[in-house]
Image (tube, rainbow, N blue to C red; front, top):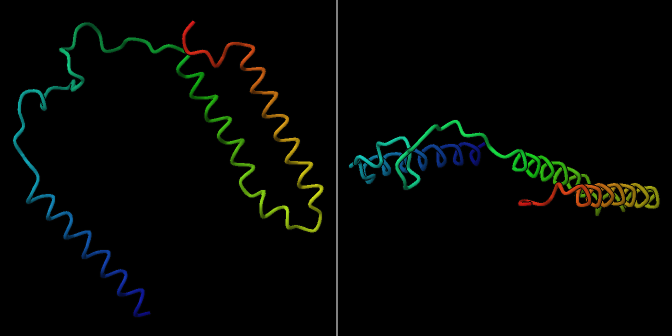
Length: 116
């Protein structure tokens, strides 16, 4: 119990110290560029509602899809120590084959090309 109380007190104390140091040492001299809504280096011209390319969203969704598929393979080293490692390796091979086929399909459809 003493260790938990010590860690809790240390965390609260360190957090409070860092917040106060930030308040004391932060530079609070705003200028016109910092106060402007655009900080990208050029003056805003035209509408801010320009549409994004659908290609950007497709690449992002494909990244998430393949990233989640890879997450299914993370427990593999522990799963090979189960009673039947052959079933585990069969499911792993199935996941990898499906992942590879999906990747080849997207490549052939042109979904991975950023510019045409």
